[in-house]
Amino acid sequence: MIKNTALGVELLLRMKRIRLTEETIAERYCEWKMRCPTHLCTGQEAVAAAVGLALRTNDFAMSTHRSHGHYLGKGGDLKKMIAEIFGKATGCSSGKGGSMHLIDLDVGFKGSTAIVGGSIPVGVGLGLSIKLHGTDQISCVFFGDGSTEEGVFYESLNFAVLKRLPVLFICENNLYSVYSPLSVRQPAGRKIYEIAGAIGCMAAHGEGNDALEIYKLVSEAIKDLRNGNGPRFFELATYRWREHCGPNFDNDIGYRTEKEFLSWKDRDPIRFLEKSLLSQSTITPVDIEKMEASLQKEVDEAFEYAENSPFPAEEEAFSDLFRE
Image 1 (cartoon, helix red, strand yellow):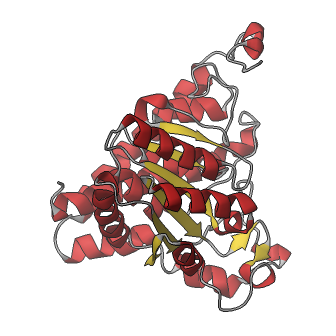
Image 2 (cartoon, rainbow, N blue to C red; image 1 turned 180 degrees about the vertical axis):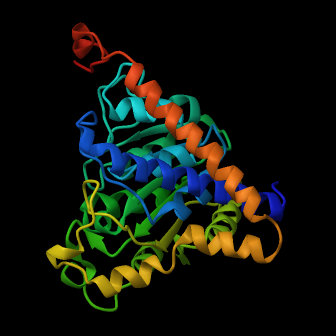
Image 3 (cartoon, rainbow, N blue to C red; image 1 turned 180 degrees about the horizontal axis):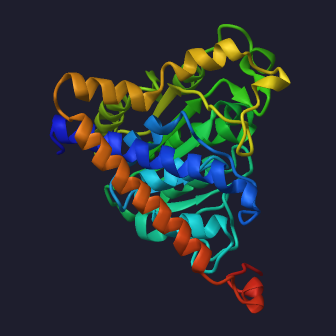
């Protein structure tokens, strides 16, 4: 068990790694060397960092099109991730998947998909496999609020409850499905976690910008899951800073206001934890400078690795295919 002081520092480190990676992708995307679409998670780092830290390496995780933070939070290899976005053979998906299709079996990251809601039934299937094998692993499924409007969400959740599967459902509610707010997609007053509760799943709502709170909530749930008391569902309120898909900011197109954006930016999960750790003298400004310098070196090396890696050979296009 990580002590509270070490926990806070580790969460800060993980969030800063995710933030710096995403912001560097945004900065360098215009170089035209990353040719796949990218859905950045700047502003949503707390969920990925806290849940990833609470999971074990051999636990399973499934993610969505916005998967960079989840992959890194689960312990994914930064060099392999950047190489994948560059389409290189050394990427975690051998250069074939790009930003939205990351997979790394070494850390239990079973994959991500661009199909909204598509990862949910796969994550539940992984939970069933765990139960059949009788291990104490768990399957974690990350998805957004938009996925809860897909029929497969209800079917999967119902099955997980019926079979008492060790599945941890993590709904990152960032208020938007592409450019559509919740107000035009769901009835006023509806709470997503209450829907999960009505289906029979133990469910709760949490502050998605408070990494320590998330870690506490999820860690306690994971203990129950490992003891056969599943599944569990968490709706975590968060907010993406950049555009739905791409490296830019898009408040100017009118689907959200600058005031709303700035109000959420003021709740920056990294700044919130950093201020708390500084006020408690858990960390010093010098410590933060050293942490950031080390992370900058790590990110720079990852991009250099991707730049210098080869593209896959042409014949690789026909390998690792499933067919009847």
